[in-house]
Amino acid sequence: MQLTNRLVPAAYRDVLRVPGFRRLLSGETVSYLGDGLSVVAITLLAIAIAAPEHTALVVGAAVAAYTLPAALGALALAPWLRRLDARTLVTANALLRAGGLGTAAVLHLLGRLSPAGYVALLAVSSLLVAWGSAGTYTLVSRLVPAEHRLPANTLLGTSQTTAIIVGPPLAGLLVAATSPGVALAVDALTYLVLAAQLRGIPVTAVPAEPTVPTSGFRLLARRPELLGLLALTAVFFFLYGPVEVALPLFVVDTLGRSAGFLGVYWAVFGVGALLGGLLAGALRRVSPWPFAIAVIAGWGAALLPFGLTTSTWITLVGLAAGGVIYGPFPAFNITLFQSAADPADLPAVLAARGSITVAAAPIGAAFGGPLVTWLGPGGTLLASGALTVALAVVAAVLRLASAARRRSAPVPAATVG
Image 1 (spheres, helix red, strand yellow):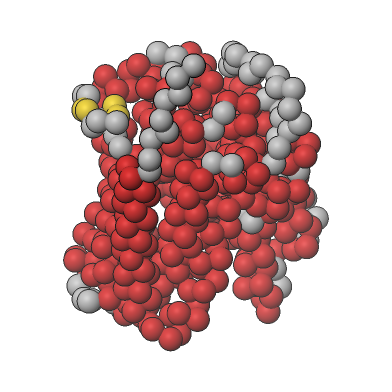
Image 2: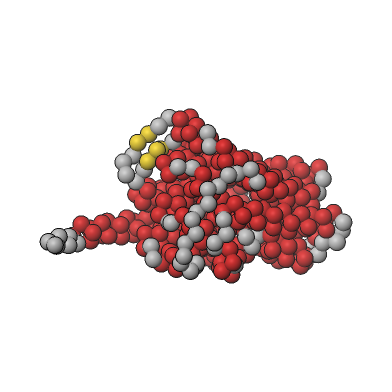
């Protein structure tokens, strides 16, 4: 595909003319804002209910319970969910999120929430997250023509990025004025808004297929292109994981700044990702694999200054540039899957993808602690950046080798009948 440009308003105007997509975007934007609130509310509520000697354990368990069970749900629930329609998947996830988070909030406000019960409710609320995300992007593929999917995915991604920037400060104000339980209750309400918006979305049904439903991983195994993209994405996210451990320690220990200054680093990254995503969404068509590899290489290069300097300004600029470079990646990645998978198989394929990508970064973060102990915060960020650049180089070499094999493959001779 050739790369062509369109003005940003024109690129998004076509997408926003689709009524069903407008409803989906508005509902998801509200729920994303709730997730932005939960970044702060989840940990503060854990601190509020934990015994002082168990605070770190409860906080860690709560954060893990809010994300990791999504990978388990993607695998364990596949036999029952992989052929449900996309709107039902998104609605089920929204209602389960609202129920689990809302119950935790109400119990806390009543003084009846225990740490174990809190972790259990968070875990239940996250079981369908991968399926909900799969349903969202399957809806995009059903509602929006193929040539408009990249801007549509970009609008969803930038809404999520904006929520990550805006949500935590709002949560801080809300918690200061009320309590963490109230902030969590607001998060639950945002999912009810999403469920309500979904009711008005018309979706064209995908014709039923006579074949026996197949798991997402088996479908991926039949498509080497998608399997290779998933492997590349998983390793990329895994290599990002140590950043979440090393960056706070770099700010506090290496730079000698306050813990609050970490928010400045994440803010410049978030703003950069927002701008990068919006600008890239204006690209009507782009060669997806070269673009994905370039993004990975660029993000890795943006981390290298952290291991070479202690200049606050240089590292801030590096992280902002990394945000601009990374911003387009989620939308392009999802668009590739939407284009390559069969419509009936897309929810199962995207849920299988989600089970891997959701777990990749936390697993990488688990390795971050030992790496920081061994290399220090700056050394860990440098190692993450260098390995990410190396990943891009390996992916580029493999793509070139694959293209060369296809060009050299003999063309079957035509038979005369």
